[in-house]
Image (cartoon, rainbow, N blue to C red; front, side):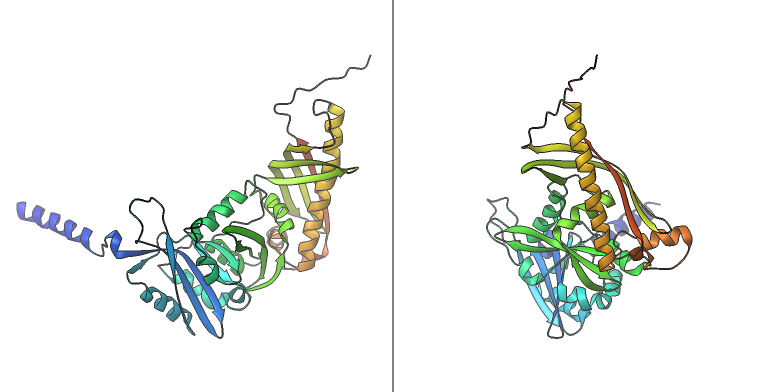
Length: 356
């Protein structure tokens, strides 16, 4: 009995040591870039540096880039170029070049989905040159991949000009009938991550782009934002508000795309000097901005119709209800938006006027 117990403990001990690597034996990859130029795949890894000043708590990174005509070979060469074993469990950003997005998604998608080293939960962005983006480290920008992800997360609360998209979600959108993918395009300028718009996909190809000013309305309709700024000029004086909550439904019926629901906003700027304690002034604001918002939502959907980009899954929505596979019907129907704009009354004491 004692021998059996001892053997069991020995097996457990040895099992814990199998395939075990000390932290200083690993190269922690935090970002992966994929480009295609001159008929070769160019792979860039952003790697956390172990050569950090021990007196400083700052984390720094470096990049390794290799290339090959074969995508799997390019990945292997980049891993081999790192002096330590590449470790991908902390990788959280996949950067695709526009060249890859336009012509080579089908080539890499299946391989990445089957690659056990690459996490399906990577955030995906698009840029001109992934190597240039990931290597743009500086004294104020130590780890680019983390900065890009942080910028996208923060954008949800400061304008909503980005779309956070996981690799697995992108793959599902590309492979599913009635769904088109939309990926944020980013750049870097003086250590600052810039949101430049959305790349629009049709099947496996990036076919168009959506201007930055449209993205807040996409996020609003998807229910994935905490800050959409809505402004209006009242005879040369600005009134600005921030939509912090929304309850919007989007559906497609036989001949109409219908948008309905409510949004709630806080006042940002009141150059008009509306009396926010006065019900009649609040009513004027709400009626005016209700009209403005519905015009913008309608124009946004019509822009998608013109571009034939179903990033709101309207084709899938119609198929689910009618079981008719008409992928483009949604581009030919009318758009009707009936969303109510509401000013937050929290913190405002109203003056109630009585008529006698």
